Image 1 (cartoon, one colour):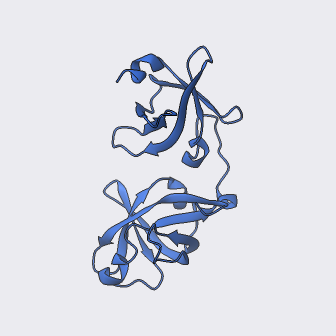
Image 2: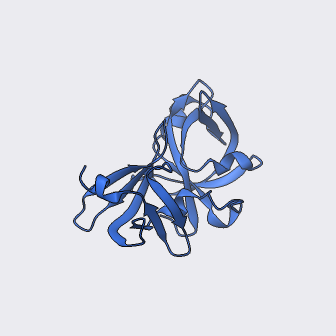
Length: 176
């Protein structure tokens, strides 16, 4: 990841005939900014250099988002950006207002602990988008992945200072 930049989400397929792209949101913070806004675009493709782009429009569309990038006016031009990750400078992130709100980037790397405070060998690697609720993807030292719904029944306190996340009844998830 580019140092000091936060992933906002990934660009999907072109939408419509004016060069809009679908936007799979990781952090919804982009809706709080006045447009246009300059971001970085990065793709996993080594032949696609990281570049600065300007978002001109962002619209909600059937529970998701579509956006328009400056200089992109056709679906064919937009297709080149499919799969790209939009990055925002971390210093522009608005401050969190409540203790139960987090940026996804703040959660990555948290150590799982059980209800008694005992550390587990699980580390949070990713937060997966899911229509019902986010899914926490933990990994164990041997590489095993453990998926846990990010809902209060299964997840307790998140402590960013201690870098821990409490999992309720982790023994149940350990056996699945």
